[in-house]
Length: 201
Image (cartoon, rainbow, N blue to C red):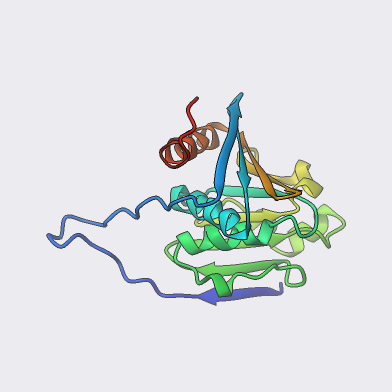
């Protein structure tokens, strides 16, 4: 299996009195607007590339080991851009995050391992097995799957779908949960976004 591995060693941050790890503050969301939330979904508008990365950083900050993010969008929509933000929140250098268009899966080491899949060039479920998809997706660490909509029948039952659409003056990002973990994650995202956007619901 051809994968790209980026490793970064992160020191453990602890409180001065030794009381335990210091929680990472939730990042600001410059350029991100919460447009609506209904039926368990949330829709954001990102005005530029920095805003798209900022939303990714928020998702990464709130993520837990075992989480799966399924990214959907046209070529150039910003799937890898959002992944850069998500991975950076987990201690991965943004420069290490590249689209795995040819390697098909990249692995980045930070505070959690990030498995980054790109399914665009695959034609069959047999090829998913060849790249270790069933072994790695949803295991310890965080999994990001670009072009997840090409193999919906092969996805784990629970995940967060992140649909990205290019608009005239930015990107629209819709979060759709599948499973109780991701319903709760969207609630956490909304609580964080409310304090930064002034949106109420």
